[in-house]
Image 1: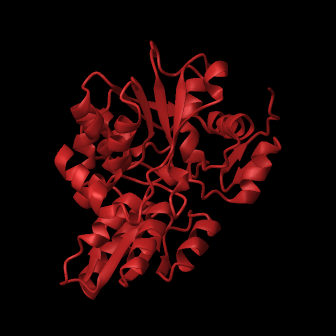
Image 2 (image 1 turned 90 degrees about the horizontal axis):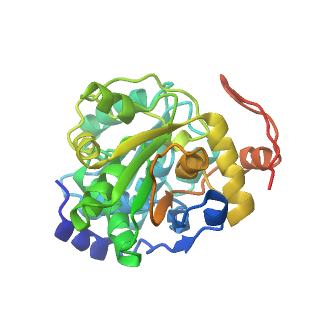
Length: 333
């Protein structure tokens, strides 16, 4: 499904709109006892990697469509809105009530229409699919779309070009568009690279689906890693198979572990980012991957976190989000 030549062509196609992001040495390396590099996708024009897949999908849009629609937990919607604005296309973004306000406002500022309805990503997806049918709009899946997958896969190509000696890659995992695309590229370039999908403990849809050997419905929970919320779709065509084939393992981290990882990345590497970005760091901090050897990298996927929430975390305060409560914990060097 993901071919190296197609990914290379995609990289050229989207290059006018997408940054080739830095791969930096992390100051956490000494503390963790491993050689760690961070791929800074938060330095994209929309502050997140999702611009890659969204831009590729919009550039490949057929003239038969009047515009596009999608469902999103935030960053995919922002990517689609940004890409649609650049190409003068209509965009309607459907989101659940669980999406943080700052992400909703960011999308509206890009000129897209936003529809808020339902308490889950699956409900938002249903609305978006109905809009697509009734309004001649192209539905762009956040993960289960070949144009989107090829766009996200360009990160894997860049990563390998920047440092072909990387032995392990830890990728935030939700619907599998990012993890499936990157893993497919890396495994074709070097089958010996270990690729891990990392998700939160509650509501890890891809983890549960692979465990059951089929796309499955999973209850959605509020999480600090809000970008990882949502299902993978029962009719999933691509990302499930890619993750099933190419991921060496899927690792789950707790909300408390994500909280502490956000502190570490901020205080040690001076990076403000989303909870979803640090799940790889959380897994490393808690020794969740056994027999990890050699140069390791993880993707810092986006910076669109609510700054008030981030401030509370770095100050060690308690966090309450809906039914989610996390006891505060001051940072210790």
